[in-house]
Amino acid sequence: MDHNEHTEPRVYELGYHLVPTLAEEQIPAASGAVRGMIERISKDIIAEELPVFIDLAYQIVKTVEHKNKRFDDAYFGWIKFEATPSDIATLEEELKKDDNVLRYLVVKTPRENTFISKKFPSSNAKSRDTEMLAEVAEEEAPAVVAEEAVVAPVVKDELDKAIEELVA
Amino acid sequence: MKITKQQCYFSANNVKLIDYKDTEILKKYLNPHARMIAGKRTGICAKHQRQLAQAVKRARFMGLLPFVAR
Image (cartoon, chains in turn purple, yellow):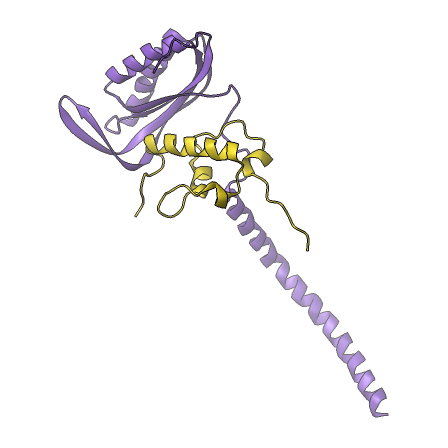
């Protein structure tokens, strides 16, 4: 990829997986190393999410010391930062050398937050809402039955009267 | 009968860029085999359908979504 066609600073986002063989305590150090690489090239770190343990959708293979290692899960984190395109090339080289980084992806992105599933109700949030509605409905249901019970005798009386009038 | 025009979900919510990390939203536009659903069927505008395709491919590369399921 030609990184030289555009030279002004841009907003990028680095998403990365750390290998699952690291213990939970080693994660801050490993993600700190990745952050360090970015701090060297960027003045402005806009947003960051520390790596969290996730199940991968498929098995990812990484070659470590001429051996294929297979991973079903990883620690996924991301950092949004501002940098010039030429710096991205150096960042990618460093990431390739880091054995703790299972896979990474650098993308161009706007400065604003692009994560929308929290902002707008997703399918999960919707189902939660409907569950809540169902609970509310259950609470209200007995009251409605009681009301009907009150209404029913009146209707019966009216009916009886009407029948009597008809008979008479 | 009143004809209601379905608007693009992303245009309606004023989305600037579809994020590949948003797997909950991306999954809504995949069929059970994890293939992308065609723009004709999703009702998304062409601009956001292209962004969606890009986001799904990025999510697949990062192991957040499967390339194939079942």
